[in-house]
Picture 1 (cartoon, rainbow, N blue to C red):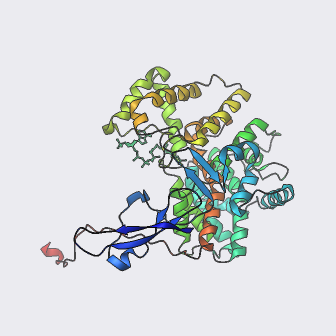
Picture 2: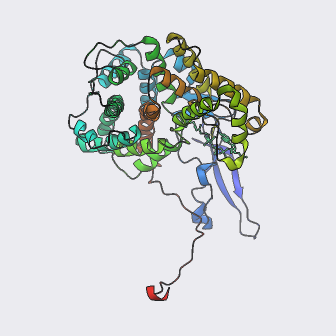
Picture 3: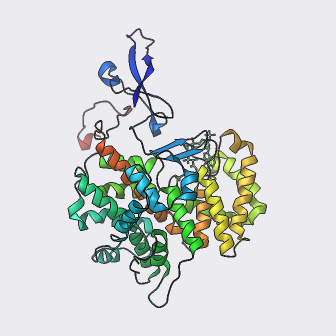
Length: 436
Ligand code: ACO
């Protein structure tokens, strides 16, 4: 970051002296006012619940221009990455900052492929869960448990440990996700296949069984790979900030990523695609396209507590570029599977059209986000709704790792410790229990 030409001045109406703060510029995007000395100089904090106006770190990984509907990984537009690159190249880019040439890509993919198996005792660990446990509950546990299985890569301050744990996490995540699924459905686990691509391997581990051959459908493989690319990183979102905050205490990388998985689970974040598909199914059960009007009326009624899931985004206030790419994949997959007339897809298209023309959504700049279509694609592939967020977690793992690594390497990095505006009781004395 570099110092901007101007400075920010904070003045007070009570006559207290005003204070100047430096302003920094990034490569693109809004400048930031450096308020680090605010407390020291004034005894005051800033108040910004939900971090609506707070940059908590400097980052060179992902950039979003919410008004333009632009998403860049290391400077490359998501549209170009999704159409010209695969997930392994995207992982390499996010981790190391540049796109690999063919030799570097092969070496990286081989490294990942050679780390896909998990410690055999992980299988016993999974057996401790109820069969009907939510896959995200299993995944949160399994990722956290990795720190108990891979003792040789738990020092977050050791670059070599971070490098090994990064590869282990990216490589083993599909294996863990597939294990959570197989355990749910009561089928034996399928071991990873080194001859398959990253996405193809997940399909194999989820849908193959030991009794017959399984052939990966290339259209589905490509769509799944695109889902991974689109979800790989997204700036300082809730789960990424969780990973940074958790990692800032010096905890091991597996524990920090497990914290990210837990945060992602929520319906306002990674759980939205699951919630979106459930919503579409409910509207379909109510009567489908005919009932969209009634549903939109409920959404607009603030007392109903009903949201149009898959719509709206904290940052995108024009459109989510990932939604367009996902809609494209959705069409390809439904066509390849002969599901062009899928009623939920038709319902989603109709719902999107009606919402985009409605004043409520127009005024609030609410557009479909990536989750509006990703659920339909995953459902067509045969992935159950309860697994959607686990697939998202798998894809976001590389982003979490890249962000964690960047934080540890930042000379300004400190343990994260927000302040508060205290509104509870001031000091008071404890009264003996018989006198309360
Ligand atoms: N349906 C109906 N109204 C909405 C929606 C929605 N999906 N999203 C926002 N609004 C309304 C809010 O009620 C608010 O209205 P008001 O100004 O009258 O009070 C206004 O739009 C602004 O919304 P906020 O909640 O303040 O926006 P915020 O940036 O805090 O929230 C969020 C963003 C959480 C994503 C929200 O849009 C939402 O809950 N969407 C549905 C869940 C979803 O799809 N999440 C996925 C996010 S993408 C991802 O994680 C990959």
